[in-house]
Length: 81
Image 1 (cartoon, rainbow, N blue to C red):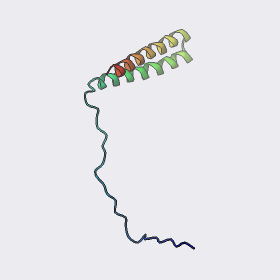
Image 2 (cartoon, rainbow, N blue to C red; image 1 turned 90 degrees about the horizontal axis):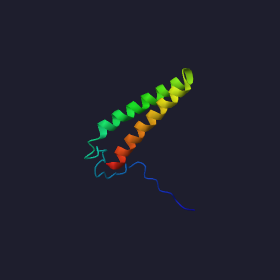
Image 3 (cartoon, rainbow, N blue to C red; image 1 turned 180 degrees about the vertical axis):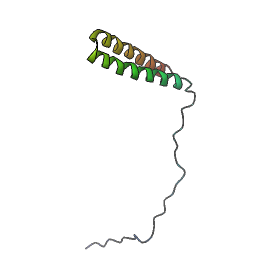
Image 4 (cartoon, one colour; image 1 turned 90 degrees about the vertical axis):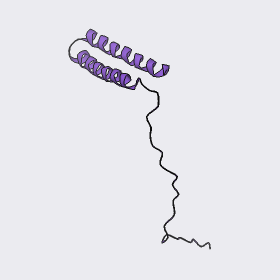
């Protein structure tokens, strides 16, 4: 029979070398502009869905397509960086 020795009365020492902290990426000066584009995309897409469902199908479709173009521009800016 194998004995199991549990030393739970003594606390384990944990070695910490320092915490990793999330740092803002350096050189991302387009981030505020991209955030504005994302906000415009979300609002326009939401408004487009509402218009599509309750007002007019054609206008709602154009609004959602315009929102998609704005999102593609934001993605291109992210890729170019």
